[in-house]
Image (cartoon, rainbow, N blue to C red):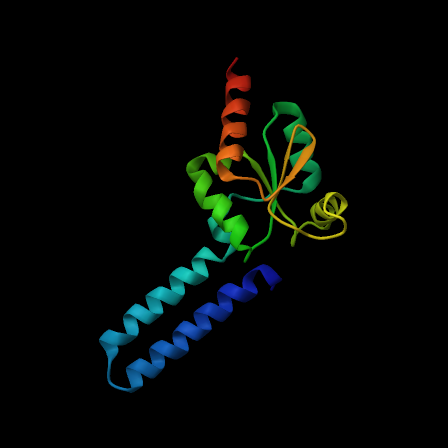
Length: 150
């Protein structure tokens, strides 16, 4: 099990415990909302809500070819989650690198953040941007789409 799944699994376990306690007390109806809430929280903090990750080398190669941004992220990061949700469907156009699954990705992030693994780090045209505004990233995605079309 990778550490990306630790928080979601802990949330599901807590939800199951709270729901079980409610059920034992005789409130089956009260158990369901707790279970659903913790399942939602687990899902939001899991790698499943992010586009499929690629390796750092693959993301860099593809980005150089088509100009799309590379987003370095990790599961459980509230700022990564914020960026992902604020980008909406256009998030799938960027190349996402999970730094917990790709040591080269983690090294690339540390190289531009004074040794820290600060995410999200977005690289556009070879320039890193740490925790950029989602509107700015969305604009870079639009620019890369228009460059591909033109």
